[in-house]
Image 1: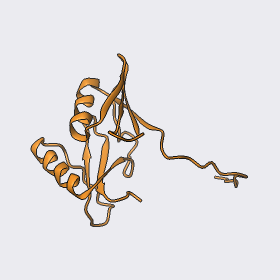
Image 2: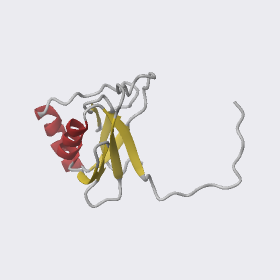
Image 3: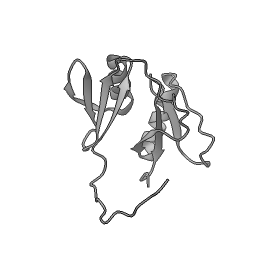
Length: 133
């Protein structure tokens, strides 16, 4: 594979949004609003836009018109993460246990205070206290 050097670099203000396909739109909305306190800001028959409270982060759930398989290509590192503080990490762990949310094993990660879970379609979500840097 040949690479070239870019003449300029694009400076961003962060991520604009994350968008994923989901099998059951209402089930996924319930999961993300209950687990992460995301707010519904737009809804159609085909998608729902969520936002983090007080933030600019957008998260789109699209009703899939085919089976959803997040790990269909053998992903081992693909995931997205939510930043939480120490107190909310403990609240999240309690919520995960009470609601029997699947904890995803991630053997490639060094020891530390974090957890990987799976949403209803099997997307892997990381929760980690700190700055996520």
